[in-house]
Amino acid sequence: MGNKAVLYRMATDEHLCPFGLRSKDLLKRQGFAIDDKKLTTRDQADDFKREHNVDTTPQTFIESRRIGGYQELRKYFGKDPIDNEGTSYKPVIAIFATALLAALAWQWGSAGNLISVRTLMLFIAVSMLILAIQKLQDLYSFTNSFITYDLLAQRHLRYGYAYPFLEAYAGLGMIASLSPLLVSPISIFIGSIGAVSVFKAVYIDKRDLKCACVGGGSNVPLGFVSLTENLFMIAGGLIMLN
Image (tube, rainbow, N blue to C red; front, side, top):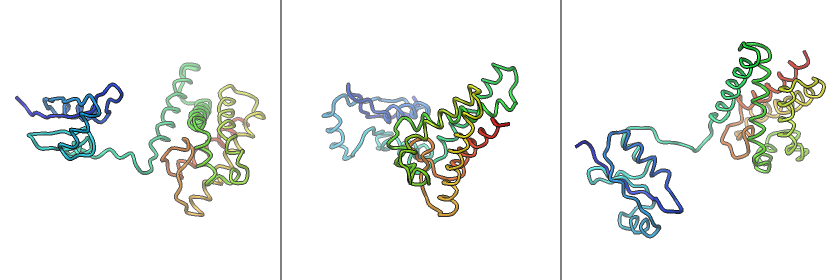
C-alpha cells in the first residue's frame, strides 16, 4: 500500500494556507498517500489546535506520530530548512542574471550576434532599469535604507527620492542611444557617489548594513555586490563617452 500520512491544513474561503499546500506537495514527492484533512473554518482550526496542543497549522501525522509543520516535515525527510531570514545576495544575482540574458537576447535579435560593446551596454542599462523599478515600488522604504549610508542623501534627503528616477533615466538613455552628454554625466555622477558611499560604509567604517539597491525591504547585505551596481553605472557612462 505504501506510506500513508494524515495532513491537517487550513482551507477556508478566506485563507488557503500556502504551507499546507507545500506540505502536501512534499509528501506526494516522497511517495506518500495523503489523507488530506481540510480545516474549512476558523473554529475547526482552533478546535484542532486545542485538541493537539499546537499553535499553528498545517500539521502532518505519519504512522500516528505528529511530525509538525512544513519545516518539521522537511527536517523529517532530511531536507534543509527554508530560511528566509538574514541577508542574501539572491535578489541581486537574480536581477543581474536576468539582465544579462535579456541583453544577449536583445543583441541577438537586433544584430545577429551575442558579444559586443552594445551587449555590455544593454546589460548595464537593463540592470539599472530593473533595480530602479525595485526602488520605485516603495520610495519611502528605499530612502529609509539609502540614507543610512549614501553620503549625498544624508545631507540632502531629496536626492534619495530622486536617485531611482535618475537611475531609470540613465538606463533608458543608454538603450535609446541618446546623446552621451545627456546621459553619461548623470550615470557617472550617481555611480561615483554611490561607489564612494558603499566603500566608506563597508570597507572603512566596517558597518553592517543592508543595501537599498533592490528596494528598502530587501535583505541584501551592503558589500561588494552593492558596489558593483555603482561601478556598472560608471562603466556605462564612460562607454557612452567613447
